Length: 446
Image (cartoon, rainbow, N blue to C red; front, top):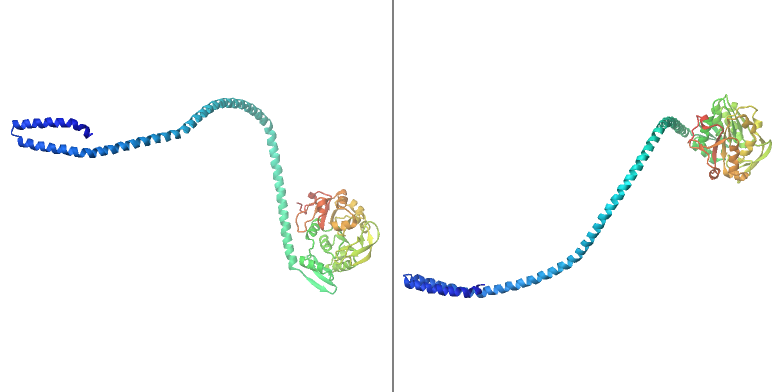
């Protein structure tokens, strides 16, 4: 830039120098003018010396500017390359947005039309429903009152059942505790005197399994069945114990009916019958217990009694592992009970001979419509007898009995399972009733 000004500045300086010389000549300022002229010469020399450095700086600036222009051009190209697909996508998005706006408008119109139709339909349905509601409101209110009354009654019945069950459990626990505390077994030669809740029984010493079981259970091998008998019997009643064995159920029955009642016992085994006769005397109940040393059956006669190792295993049927046999007298129960005798309960435990006993008591069953039966059901025994569970159970059902399973743990009675399910059990006692459960308030039903 200074180089460009130099041609213009030199003529001006020359004229200024000439003018100053003229002024010096015309005045007394010669010395000052001479000093000023020297200073101007030094400025000119300085300008000539710095012009080269300034020019170099200008060239460097020009090169930098050129490089900057090139970089800017390259950057502009890359930006253009990057923006090109973005611009394309933006155009596509704009087209899609335009289409969406069009579809939205059409959909809105369709939706408004649909809402209008549905509103009209709902208004019509609401009118119909309101009318139906008004028509049925009175009936519904009455039905609700009836249901509330039924629910209240059911809750009351349920509460009574729960209280009865609690009382049964509480009584059983107390009774069980007393039995365990009073366990007694006294050896008497070939017999063992064992303690039961109602007194004492004589058990055969050779049947160690039975003695231990009676001792450990406190005299209650079948507590559920005993509880059922005690609930069914009242003082003065008459009952039968068929298959009395050594008296585990007979003595409780005798205690329950008392001297004003009577128990007719049937036991075919001579060994068990001898023990039982002595036990009745020990307990002082022989006065109202009639013991018949024979088997119960369909018709009078004699049979071969098969006796197993356990004293409770004795049957007129063939018995695997029987240790001995003995000839016994057989009598129908109808022949042991006088006509017109009111019988409340018959307990039958005869190892598969149950239907023979039943056929021999047809008169007793006919004379006592409220008769209850407590019968052992053993599928293995029935198999030896050639009788199916369906036939066995059906015989009692056809006679008008409803069957219930006895829970030996003092639980509630529950309806008997189908024959196919009962056939899977080893042994179970069944309570058979002709009257509905409500006729037996002392019993607990599930």
